[in-house]
Image (cartoon, rainbow, N blue to C red; front, side, top):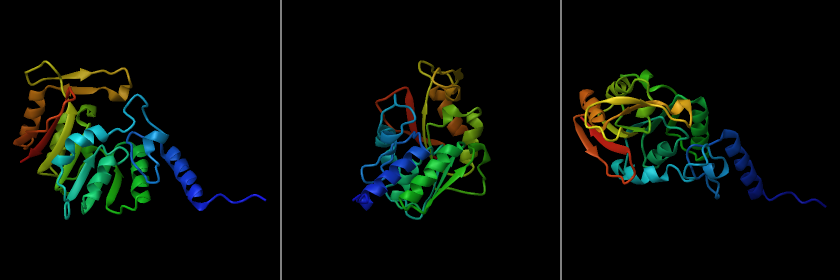
Amino acid sequence: MTLPLPQAEDRHETLRAQILDHGPWWHQIDLGNGMQTRTISPENPRMAIDYPAGLWGYVENSIPQDLSGMTVLDIGCADGFFSVECAKRHAKRVVSIDVSPHRIRSCAFVAKHLGITTIEPRVQSIYDLDPAEKFDFVLMLGVLYHLDHPFLGLQKVSNVTNTLLLETTFLEGQTESVMEWRRRSISPREDGWNPSLTCIQDMLQKVGFQHLQEIPRPQGPRVTYLCTK
């Protein structure tokens, strides 16, 4: 006589299949019962399997512990790790945008699976932000160097918020306010502008973020700023 599989095992296998269907994954997200997205289907196996845990360790204390009543915009949300963390901090609303339909599909799956109703995934570009839609806090982590028009992108962000958490690469060994085009062998989509620290600061202040608090981190060449007006 063939016995049916236990219900718990059925759910486990169903979730594993869903993770594979929505993969490969850029973010390691714990979906419960020991099921973690990158462990099962990693986008880039050369990256840390727990990415972005390291980045989260640097920035988590720069995000209010209690986001109750606040609206958050997560630009370049990828699979939604940071959106989920903001939702866990009781944000009233988290708008998660990315230009990749694949990433938004994954983000929507994560939110639904975890029962989070405050996350709103959208396929949307930074250039299409509506200045009439305001946010209390904006995350822009690992996005600036992907933009063809980084200054325009920052202008668009400044139109919708007074507070920005920015994390990006920077051009080492340069004290002038300059950018250079960076070509990477990993993938053409990784090509982009690489500004000097002075250039990043100049752009942020030019668009209205007058107060820049640098968040210390040991790993370079990357920088994180909490930017306010």
